[in-house]
Image (cartoon, rainbow, N blue to C red; front, side):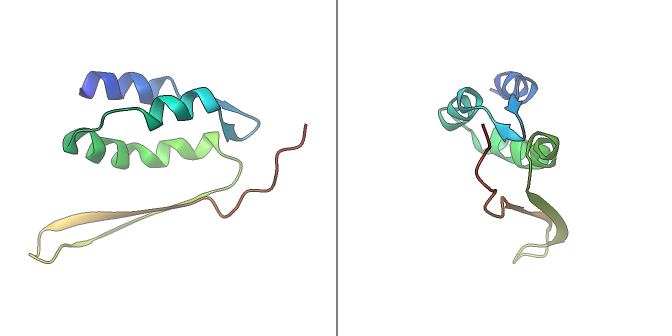
Length: 84
């Protein structure tokens, strides 16, 4: 499962600041385990160079039990329409 996620991440495709529909479809249909989902979220800042406009914020904190966690916030900000 993790090797499949690594392949998905490594195959990221973008065009003029937008993720390609083919890559988004592979992401949409990827069957995430909890472990793979956690790794994907940790990798998420790596997607920024492929997007024209987005903000990714990572904050360190604690969960309700006092264990350390990372809070990841991803905003697209409503990117303007792509010009053709």
